Image (cartoon, rainbow, N blue to C red; front, side, top):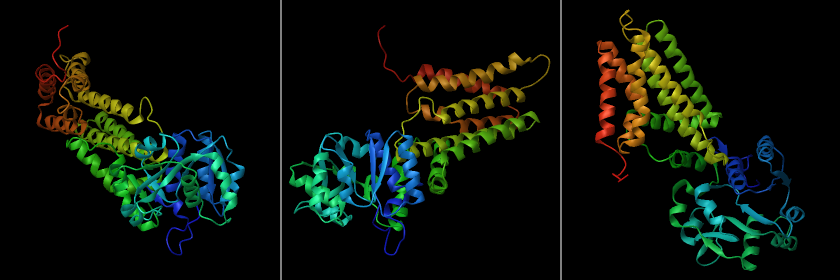
Length: 394
């Protein structure tokens, strides 16, 4: 954390942000995901960003050290250790880097034509560095033979090559776009952010209304929310607020508006899920067994059922159990059918935004009861006519 983020910039390039997370925090997430026990940062001074990095490392159970020069590494790395080192400003996708680094001791390289143009150091006639190495700890002692102001990453890379550590070329597919980049200034960080979001938000979803709106929300508001911190939590809170307002409107007889708000809550929930996937990649976190957004999707379904019950005819000949039967059956089928139907149809059935708008329109036109019953019937027929599994003899 030594090189400045552009000419005259006071901040090291390691603290440039991509997706609301500094490059150093990206690298820390990759190191922790590979079970590194000690984190060593080379820096000239202690800053608030450095303290935040230390707290994150120690919260994950790793020891954290700050040293002023490469020679200080010799007192922290023993001969029995393995050293994983990253170039300053390297932004790399863990999905691409981990399989290569898990192979064992290696100096990751790339073709010289693309590597030098991207800002990486040239190693020989055909190869440029790729900004990441995994080497035996005993090689660190060779730093004592070099000047104290040497470039630590360049020095360790050449020491490793001279000691016979093999080169491992990064595949061309792994180097594409935002998967493997050296970020040198703020302009480059901003330029790569949108592509990095698209890369880690998950596979491009089916073009349902819900997915289209959630994707647009991610691309337009995602960067600013991520830089503001707790982006996914903000969207989840917005979804919770929409659900509560929807139920309040339904209680006072405005169930149609409540259904529309449930649709909006489903878009916010889907956007929060995409933002959370981005945050997990950046921070090196594992997905929980039951994500919060999945729990919130059940809450949206429950709110839709309650609003439908409140909107059904309330005459004496329609007791509560009768009014609740069709809405409950509809939502149960909407949960069950996507598991057994052809995959191409499942996203459309899971689209709660489309469902909420359809039910709100039916309620406004006075056809809510028939619409709920018809949708339940169509789902049941779809499960019979469009099964997703192959026929088997049992």
